[in-house]
Length: 152
Image 1 (cartoon, rainbow, N blue to C red):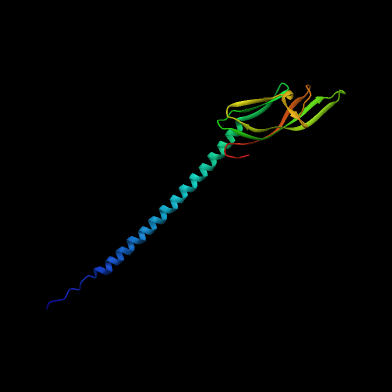
Image 2 (cartoon, rainbow, N blue to C red):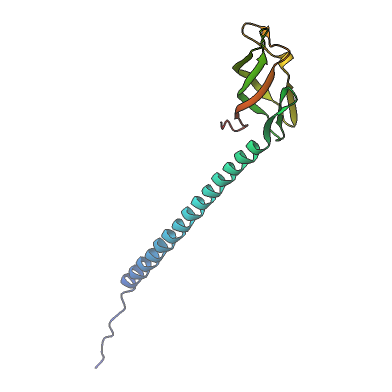
């Protein structure tokens, strides 16, 4: 007697194989997406740290100091600095021989890259355009700047 051989159901096995391959594909996609997001996060963090370093680097290249009877401001960075305010104490001897003192806003403007500016009491006007007395002496106290990125 001839025995009938049962045929293989190829459609069923092809469906199982396709399902397994699709499952492994989804797992591979999930893993690659996870690591892609991790790399993007690390790059963003590195970019933020570089930006903070650049801001600190520019701030460290801007200085002001007392020289003689004036104030010198120097921008040694490669970018202009928008100086919001320079406050200085100003002291002089008045006509009666008494020591006079004022706290003044000395400068507001932009200092170009790689330049320095010197402010002498004789060149500064205050109190409705009056000149400071010749015996004046500045003492720089506070400097507020915005860098090229707009960071104060």
